[in-house]
Image (cartoon, rainbow, N blue to C red; front, side, top):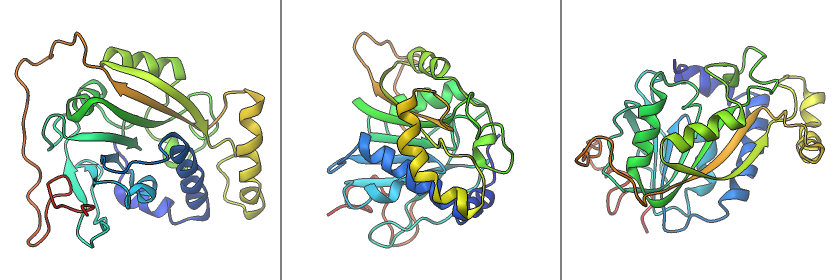
Length: 251
């Protein structure tokens, strides 16, 4: 079940949450150094990871589950770039998004398969999707009082098989958050060193998997027959939808 948005927001205001945010942003930037001209969708509570891409993306929106709750997230032009969603019914047209980042999302949804099918539906052909999910072997999934201990953790093989079952091809895999989920300043100051050294040891004990997948369309038969088309959320007065022409992030 999804965490409450207030709890997530509070965690990312702490020193530990800020360190998590910095380390994950670096990993995602290595995978996607430039998203110029792309429509980017964040799912779950992706706000901590979206900001570095906001100035490049042609369109950007942060979509948060109704069971989690949503909060205002300011777009580059000052409007609201947040939408409230249901996991099995994203309010976006088919083939409308080039990149998706799912964060604090897939491990918490109670309908994982339909949620992945919706991501596939809204992605353009060969569109890319990054999932950040808790590592079953990692320390973060076992220590309470952090968001990665909530929901279901995954092994790498388990999640990659799941992607294949829902018509995604895994492209790249990484791990992050090798440092322990503690709040003492001394250990947090050592976090950057842990993140540099631990991957070289090949121990596979990062707190999260970062898996990039590609939407494959060749030889695919739609599961539900006709395509589903649903409108974007109705914007506030004077604010256009983030994925509509001229919406937040457009030049």
